[in-house]
Length: 438
Ligand SMILES: [Zn+2]
Image 1 (cartoon, rainbow, N blue to C red):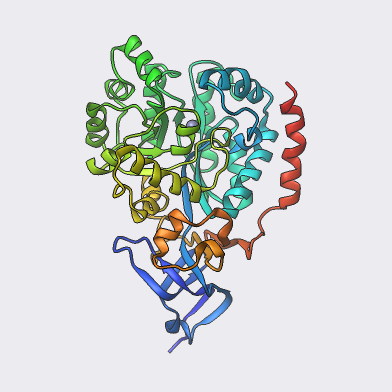
Image 2: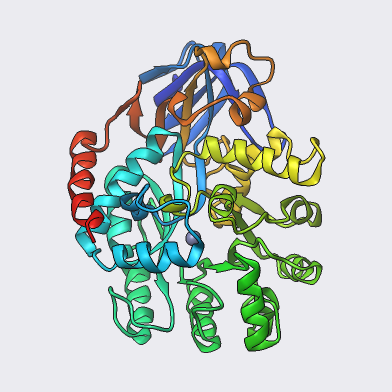
């Protein structure tokens, strides 16, 4: 009989699999070989295994890495640049001028900082929409993160690719370049129904469909967007997307704050996925997305932070806490969005929203090893009656001790291994001096 062996054993912790039975193991271990999870079970089952590297998770929670379904990673460079302003003032007077100073290298450096923050707060996968997305893909890969990235497309010329025809060409280039990458997946990302003509939307959708990729778009972020779309097209943004013919299971609609009952039925009918970004919607005073209704209707919802300038961090533990509480107070019902539901919105449902449910989002044999280990020996986590409750209501990103992505340890015992953290932070602090004095 040959002895079982693994490259890494994450051992002796409380395992939350987030699989479809929501299996938890009190004293469990997970074996990893190359990039995959090969075994999950009680720690004693692994006593005779031959293991190259043991990660001791005593007094820790072992769980799937968190997934951020919507962000603009490089916007960490604008963290705290402008707060407490009306949306249009914020965008036109601060964010757009600051973005005008970006180039490929700056987006790359800023994304490295975002990846550091995400890895160190337990995020193993993010979905990005921005300019110079090849730089975002390179930064994600260098930091060892899984990512879905797509170049933002709109009717006016882009500082990256120029006119929209070249935006489609740039997207096709990304699709070709990153086709077989183990970490990076490309999406096609028209900005929104108000910045994209029906022709643009149709073309983007057909590119996404022909390569079997996600189509990702901001939809119904504010009531004023809905009003403008009604004035222009006589339809709500969701109604307009239905009219254009791009509602489909591969569509990820971000925000979805201002929805009508008909919009919700359309989203369900076409199995559209939704990214919920509560902190950004709160900070920009956009409104509250009807998430309990969406879930009740059977729509897949994942959580996202949105860009850092409207949040102002990428910590998904804070986002989960906010999401759970926001919908309780909004509905005067403390039973909506219970902790397990919210945890799933940041793990398996988020993976489903991105089309990665076969790859990541839960701890299951055969899936890629995207795993985080969270230290529970902290005053704010004692005692612990229910791990899921702690993860949503008490834990912070900084409680994450070790992060594994695609079988590689990218942070161990609080130390980032895949990047030079000091240099990464220093680069952006330097860059900010130029951005700040506009
Ligand atoms: Zn956004």
